[in-house]
Image (tube, rainbow, N blue to C red):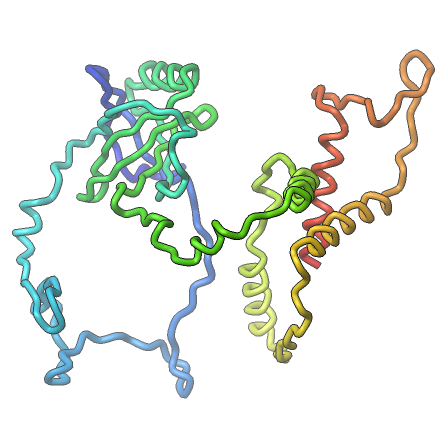
Length: 310
């Protein structure tokens, strides 16, 4: 049973919905410790005063904000505590917006909200109302003494909460000088048509289970092999001197590769229909009513990605 990391209530208007908050993600990474190459012992870090070389005790460390090099403003812990946002234990909804209006760049961390004791009916009411309206709730919540902007949205049978960055925390792409040259480089109509064909050939329904952290898997495999005593020979990476093709040649080669992959696929046998006649595979329907042409595009995109990986 997962453990709630926060409990409180969703507040909109005069309605309160008691909820508990749970983690929605579990980022996976391979963590390493720092060891001495001579003894194999784990390295310990110390806080040292560079002016004296002496280790500084934790109770003697204070917070300072740097105004200029070597010039700081010292801040006392109680001064910061007086400014902490009040832990209201509520998610205060301020407005409802369309999901398409939120740029994903603003999302930070994701959580699930579940109804707490006595809140099931109000929880289900808000969830259904938001789903029917196609809206996302924008509000504020205090988590671990930090006020967060957040978005609440239906996620299947649950309510998902994503903390968000504030407007001044997202940098504008207008500050990138390289974009000036990109605006001046216009593509031809033929190039645009071929790019659209390539996108269509690689289009598929998003399935997150198809994608894995291949680098992490290779690292774990390396660790297991070395732990078993295997000697690992690292081959130097060869330099790629192949000149980059021009844009049109790259588009043509990409489309040709996808088409050749389609031609290599064996032609499926046609099965007789219920009336005894033959049914064309190009016009057959899948069990969910979708055209098989969309399925072939999805398979084509998968084959292309598989070739790119190899």
